[in-house]
Amino acid sequence: MNLEIWKQLEDAVANCRKCSLWKTRSNPVVGGGSKDAKVMFIGEAPGYWEDVKGRPFVGRAGRVLDELLESINLSREEVYITNILKCRPPNNRNPLQSEIEACTPYLDRQIELMNPEIIATLGNFALSYISEKFGLDLENVGGVHGKVFKIKTLFGDITIIPLYHPAAAVYNPALKEVLLRDIRAIKAASDGNCTVKV
Ligand code: URA
Ligand code: SF4
Image 1 (cartoon, rainbow, N blue to C red):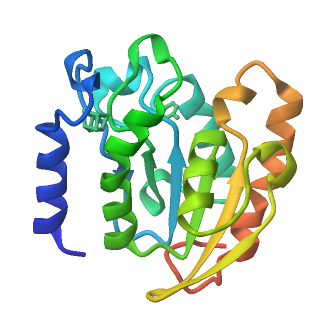
Image 2: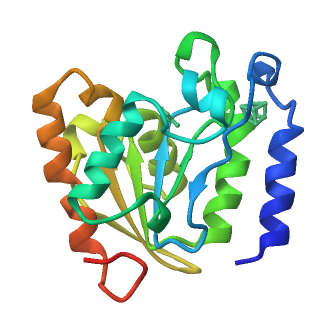
């Protein structure tokens, strides 16, 4: 892990004005957890508390994510968590296509630096970006959640696992059950000799 390069990336995001979201954000959220992790989670964008604290998934959706991780014996420190957008859209509205285009070079760089074995997408925005980036044709999480897609890249194989967004499970116990079942695919896909303890 090259800390100097990560620092440059964090500084670039902190000073970024590539879309208008810098004007209304309190703090950018670059990511959190271990940059050496084998598993990367990608959500949508910071919400209220993430914007306040500058850390990913620290609100209600974050508590669901913690529960999911705990169910497969993973802690936050053993995975890396980031988002499609690094700044909060006002009132948590959906990301605009123009914002996604402006911001995802940072995500691309994070993926390149981490070279994760497993990418778990949370919700449709992360799924469609990652699907397109890796030449998959996955548009809707409803049809593919919990399935495992293996991609060959020049830098090694990546396993893509689409999951529902944890925010969708905050008031929906049935969906939480689906997420608890689906996240086991991460445990199954990890090979046991990485930072993932299974
Ligand atoms: N929802 C997201 O997509 N990302 C966060 O960081 C928090 C909530
Ligand atoms: Fe820059 Fe991304 Fe923030 Fe837009 S959302 S200002 S592109 S860091």
